[in-house]
Length: 499
Image (cartoon, rainbow, N blue to C red; front, side, top):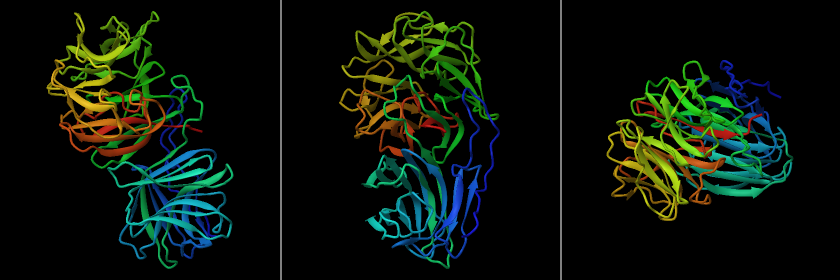
């Protein structure tokens, strides 16, 4: 047996917020050369980039015996394993292999289910049903996958893959009778016992999904606060808590994020990694529709009225206030945007049992109805130049992105696909829209928690959307404007049950 080669890890400073725990920079508990390959492997974790470099040898992962380098963790129950994957260099053998593997034991001839990318671009769903038995492979030729996902739902295992920018496709699925306790993680095999190969795994995520029967809006799972470079797609988890946090947006100075948690708003300092509660006096029932004015000085808020009434809109200085100013009198009213001059708010409101979009001057007067359709209109947000209000609507059956003039005239549909698209957020430079996409099986008028969703980006004038993030989330992930001031990054929340 070869010695263990331990992950190179660094621990971030401990932070405390409600039930917060310090972020564990390495997701895996151990590494191991499974099957005793001739050349020892290693796994190096880059704590700054949150990436893993796996180097390994191994004659093969095939037939009745496997040899590979394995970075793993022990799991129970359902889980989702996802990562961006890439070989380093041209390599020696076209059938060098990387990916995810799930195994009841750490033996080289044991049962397993694996989602595999080969050096020549072949993707395969590989499995061994009996100890010492032959590996069976279901192949998809020439896929050249860049994102690999392996999901466990009871005894069902599903392999999904994608080229970056495209939605995931479920390529294969099958049932395997494994014990509840399994070892799961990343692997590399060089397919040549005399050669070492290296692969880089980024955006590595291990998700424990919400349990069956969870009561929405009453029961929650853990939250990851993430920041992503939109151009490269590289993501970093900057904060983790076991309780819900939702809807981060960026302060104009780029130094902090503001997010909601359990009815309160917090300012999260990006330098210290510490959240601080924002004082809003008696307004404590905040939902996740808080928005900063374009000049960064005023915080708009949707919250249940202290007297017990439904959601109305308030505003306060960004530093907080003992007495936020109430803007709307009728409820429910859900804030989504400011006009660029800071004089008006735009929002979704239910009036006469129909949800439409409205705007209102914060100094008073009557609200102005902007849309009048039988479906749901939501997510209204001004473009930085004030030329348009962007929003989402299911007036055509599915939830799609639209824009209109600030007076509600000339509505124009921007997306036309099978997904249900929510919350268009326009970059500060006015060039791009980032938004949330639910899979078609989610009802068009619903934006629930804890689903497989995509973050996508497109030109502000329309065009072909591109997936920039694959995540488990939904409600609360990106409900509010969340671009960094330089239009290069976004912040969002993903979810997982946390130990």
